[in-house]
Every structure is written in C-alpha cells, then in structure tokens.
Length: 131
Image 1 (cartoon, helix red, strand yellow):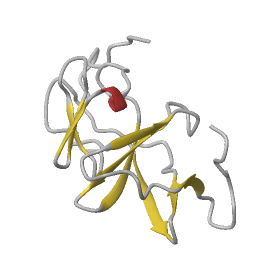
Image 2 (spheres, rainbow, N blue to C red):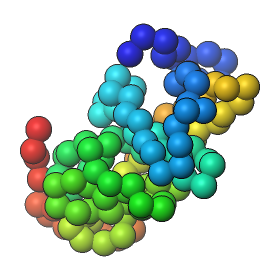
Image 3 (cartoon, rainbow, N blue to C red):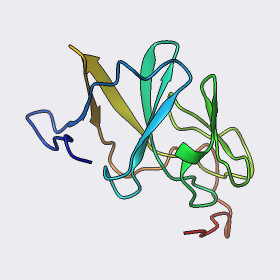
Image 4 (cartoon, one colour):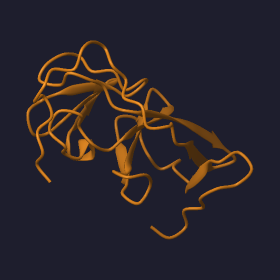
C-alpha cells in the first residue's frame, strides 16, 4: 500500500489517517510484516494484531469483530484484540499484538517481535495450513 512509511526513529510504521475507522470496524494492511496486520477500533481505541489465525493460517481480517473479540472466519477461533490471547479451542495459542498510537490524525504501529501470545501448551498438529 502506498503511503506506508516504514522505519523512523521509533521503528514504527505509519498507517495514515484512520479517523474514519468507526467503532467496531477493522482495516487490513497486507504489506506490513509477514502476514499483514489487522487494525481494529473498539471503544475509540485502536488495536492491531498479526492478520493470521494461529489455528488455521487464515486472515483474521476476513472474520467478525464483536467487542474486543475477533473471530476467525474459518473455524471460529477467537482472539482478544487488546493482547492477542485466544479464548480457547480450536486455537491453542494466541497471535501477536502490536502497539498502535494515534496522534494528529496519523496512526502508527510498532511491530512486536515474532512471539505468539501463549495461554498454554501447544498441541502437536493444532495448526492447519490453508494458504
């Protein structure tokens, strides 16, 4: 996507003006990170997750956002947009969450180092490759 500025003194990536993103809406940025990120606005705040379900390797941005829960469209795995934790099976681990700042009409995201938010042991074979 043009207009995305990588780098800078704080290693953040400019997402642009997201003031038009209403509560309960989300937007995908496919070219950020390995899997893209999905940015969600909930109760006025912006949250960002890696746009890839830890269970089924499917874009979370194609799922449904209800409150702080983002549900994968494939098998219904749900993740908390505030920290990437999962709410239980079929996912066995969370997804990476990323800090988002919004100031003067410009949103910026800081990508977390690759690290899954893990709420428990990962079961063998729990990740399904779909793309």
